Length: 211
Image 1: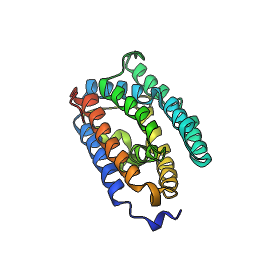
Image 2: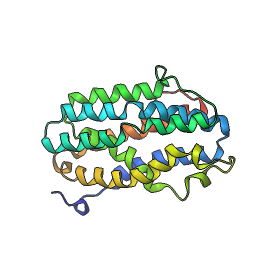
Image 3: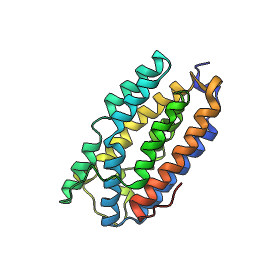
Image 4: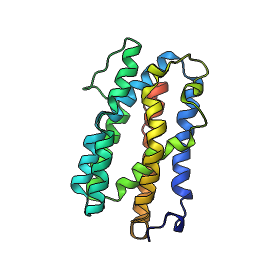
């Protein structure tokens, strides 16, 4: 079955909403240092997005998944530059060789999925790409303690827009594999939700507890 309406997405949506609630709660209390720390985390999180997706394309078992992951890799490969540019607006620099520990653990988890059917990557992407649908309004308005400009919020604004399309595309691709790999996709979505929360806790609050 490939019809999105045929499947119950409640569990995947619950994991996505949990991840979204964490980041939006952090936005509400963020001061400037917290926001800059968040941008640094997002720089590192997206620094290897293209490489991660190319890896998924390389190990994918089907031509359909290979093409899908490669297309996403092409879309995502330069997004880290947005976070870098945002940080430069504050006079900050980045160290590409020093990722936060939660981000590195996520990178390692992604590589570990090579041992499973590559539809597992869809579960990770479902959460990551569908957080944007929960954005309640303008990104800048989500930081009540800060007076941010558009030049300081490029990473967030682009993802709030682009991820809406990506999220729908991931869901449509999931529908091709839910009959056979629903448990695998759901398990990966659960892991991504926890990794995202861990990355956000470290990014905003300096908490480095494992998910």
